Length: 314
Ligand SMILES: Nc1ncnc2c1ncn2[C@@H]1O[C@H](COP(=O)(O)OP(=O)(O)OP(=O)(O)O)[C@@H](O)[C@H]1O
Image 1 (tube, rainbow, N blue to C red):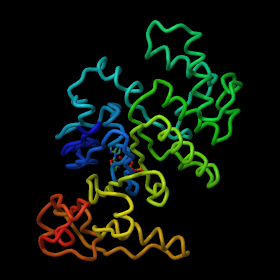
Image 2: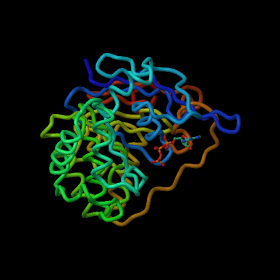
Image 3: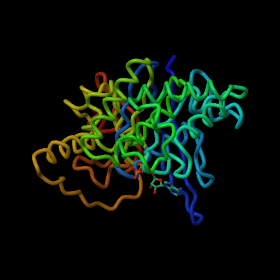
Image 4: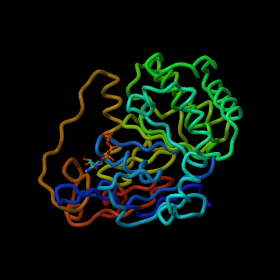
């Protein structure tokens, strides 16, 4: 049984009376101990997915269809209190430190101690302090950081504190949503190494969300490429990187190589579209069927791809 199983998930936002499906018919699963990269450009629904998994969707969002099953339990059927027992304790999230993940007016130590005691009712303060210091040392931070305010820390140190917070309650599943985006290249590499180390040492299951497929090559076993809120392609990371099946994945990888060689992204195919495949307006390979139908998932070797043309169905 997979540790996390997302089935045909559709999540919509309602704003100004209009409904936008940010996640659409999304299905994937993650086995215990596996690392999955979720890759997609801005607006592809990555953060909406993470917030759905954590039960932290804003009130204008609604799960329309599907299910999220964690260790055999449907998270969408749980009440607030039951969810609280899973969130942070069994499944936690590394936010971007730059996005107010830390309270600027409270010392790091107080924030970690409060997180620990909130989830371990009845725990003594001494136990919480010891656990916080121990977790800081896992992310290579000295005990003195307990007495510091977030503004006294560098960007990389702040991100380490955020990682420590996510590890504090010893979860099994770690979600990381663009954890290195606001950092310089050197610090970014340090944080990735740190995440790799803790995941390996603790045997954690990882879901690493990023817009940068190049970032995850050495970190993840599998990849899911998202576009328009849905899973366009998923499979073993090496396989997908070396032989992308979906035209969108192909473009993502070309862009990556292009950027490395100092070239710009390929021109978009401009096309007016109302239904069919989410990638239609940008797809160089589209055929008639792509205008009419939402592509179902097809197996192609070890990879699953949503494409009539590349999935061998057109
Ligand atoms: N609170 C909201 N209200 C209305 N629409 C929203 C809201 N949050 C996100 N959306 C819309 O949902 C879609 C997916 O957004 P989401 O933030 O999940 O994508 P993302 O891949 O994480 O992008 P980014 O990397 O830019 O954060 C976008 O079209 C976005 O405009």
